[in-house]
Structure formats: structure tokens, C-alpha cells
Length: 247
Image (cartoon, rainbow, N blue to C red; front, side):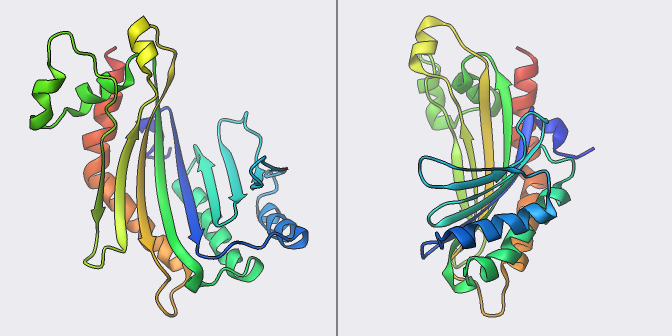
């Protein structure tokens, strides 16, 4: 069993590579890239183009888990929803990063930013923002405002970004996204929806000489998993999980 599987209703591990230059758009190049990905993962058989012009290759969506890869104008994304093992997701992302220099002409110089992102979704029927405030607390400066008689919290989506080295090129960001509207609070009618926690470690800028995308990705993963284990799980994910379970 994956250690992350028990922390939320759904979780996912994504890789995003943002490029400085636009990606190739020729039919032969795009199809050749996706065919190579599909050769490794034959169940990724659904290919389509979005209205935005983005290209998508993905597995069926009704299996409880799903691999997907997208090509945008200046971004390559690879994701795996509910992977049985984190290594399986990372193998997919590393394959994409191995292919892009040769099949899409994306050199290490062309890197604007590379992300390793973990996402966790919690299903909850109620005021998401009030639940997040209850589970994680508010700062001392905000306590008085939040406890104003008759007040209802309408928006509380804490986030923090930290630099992991002096150059500030390596950063980690924790962000919580809620989906409750003022209309729902006013009516007291809340559909079941997801509270999402996104934890991203990002490397900005061109890679160092002789550094590969795969090695950089492995470094981002190491930082992300370390921070997740030492802070995010016990201070963010489990408190949200416990707060929902008591409702």
C-alpha cells in the first residue's frame, strides 16, 4: 500500500516543465512523442486536442487511477492520479524528461521551471474555508477577526513559499484550495466537493552544465518527500483528515 494513499480521498504526483521557447507543433513531432510514451504505457490510448490547442494522451478515467501527459504551448505536464506506488508515477515522469530533449528539442538551457508536485483531495460537504480554519488554525493577528460575533469565514486558503537555498532558485510552496462560495454559505447548502492541498518543489532557470532533467527531477523529489514527511503530513494533511472525520 502506498504511504500517501491513506492520507486523502485522492492523491496525485505530477511533473511540470515550463520552457522559455514555444514547443514544436508539427504533426509528426507531436505524434512521435506521444507514440513513444504509449509504447511504454499501452493503456494510455486516449489522444485528443483541447479547444486551447493543448495535446493530451491519457488512460481511461473510470479505473480509479489514471496516467496522463499533456503538451501545451510552453509547458509539458505528466501526471498520475492515485498511483499504487510513488515510484510508478516518477518512472513515467522521468521517461517524459528523458524524451523531451531529443523528441521535442527542449535542451536544459530552455528550462524556465521544473516542478515536482504532490496533490491531495479531500471530499467534504460543508464550508471548506471554515473547516480549514478549524483544522489548521489562523494566525494570532487574525483570531479576533475570525471570531467576530455572527461572522462566517468565506475565504481562507493559506499558502506559503520558501526558498531552499540562498539563490532562491529552488523553492517549495504549500497551497490549500477551497471550493465554497458565498452563495453556498448564505443558503447553508453545500454540495460535496474537494478541498485540495498542493505541495510543489520547483527549480527555476536553466539547468547547470552537464545536469540532466532526470537528475534535477530526482533532486526535487528528494526535497519534496523530506518536507512532506517532516512537516506537511502531520501539520496539514492529518489535521484536515481528522477535522472532516468528526463532521
